[in-house]
Length: 58
Image 1: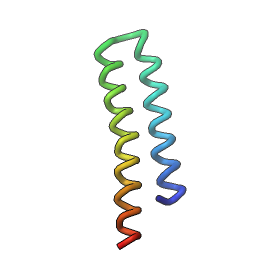
Image 2: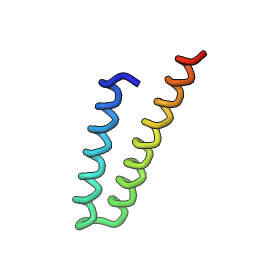
Image 3: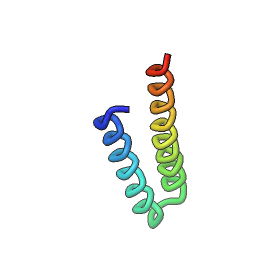
Image 4: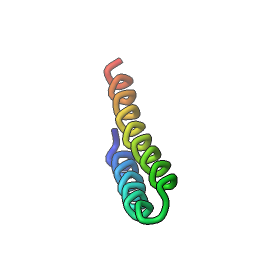
């Protein structure tokens, strides 16, 4: 995975984690939604990394 793509996933994940922390004080539903989005973003980063690694081996 390129450094730019890694940085993008890292920055988006940190922004979502920060938004989740702020949302804890406001709404449980918003917190749950942001938590799911955060986990999805982190998981998507791992999936993209694995696919790019497989493509490079083939």
